[in-house]
Length: 313
Picture 1 (tube, helix red, strand yellow):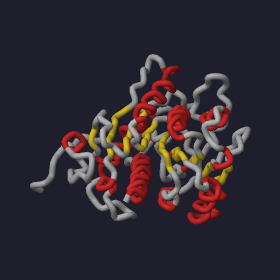
Picture 2 (spheres, helix red, strand yellow; picture 1 turned 90 degrees about the horizontal axis):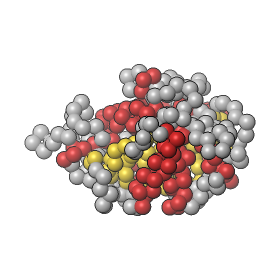
Picture 3 (spheres, rainbow, N blue to C red; picture 1 turned 90 degrees about the vertical axis):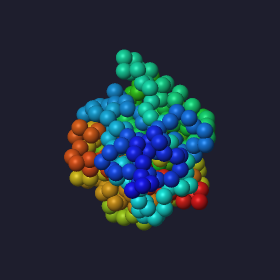
């Protein structure tokens, strides 16, 4: 116990795991250093507590807090399934949360994009904790400024291709607007786990939830690989891609979804793709039970970090 420190989020280094009790201490994501200094950071983890664009149950503004809290149990041990500590390789910080003026929700998209551009300008790989799915649109705008148009890999119950109209900003329309703005390469973009119907596909390939169950892990992996190819890609995971049995804490749950294992195993097998950034959205802890949803979301990010570390190694 002599080597243990408390509040690793403030006292620890950028690299290396923490050996801190899961029930105490400041709750950054997996005990990463809370800092606004991007010097030397390979990865920046960032919260966007915004849910003013949701169409059903609100509460995803509390998602970043819940995901950070749930992530405490993941730090300190060799990470499953890689057996590696990703922080031995990746200097990773928790930047904290985006500054959004609650009195000016119409300005949220610009605030998110501007802060994301600041983070990306440092060269850090950006991982974003949402927030509702509207936040992915300004995140794509920021990433495309750095990387050019991207293939989109979207795990979701919904297509999010509804038309919100001129200057619209909705969690159900970000794909439609991203296509309209030329942010994503639709010929290399794919949606997994869809189990609702929208008026149009916008040219994005869809592997619906029933088809995912029929294909199994290897089939889902193959479908994503064939669609994305070698294109630079952005990953967005709406936690409602999971069946409500595995993610009750979300704003628009839909039965018939993926299991946590299906999502995590698929993600683990596609981490060699050319990822340029990712987000996890729509965790709404007020509807959760025993942190089921927050644990699933934090484990998605943990698997993504393992994949990044494996590439760097």
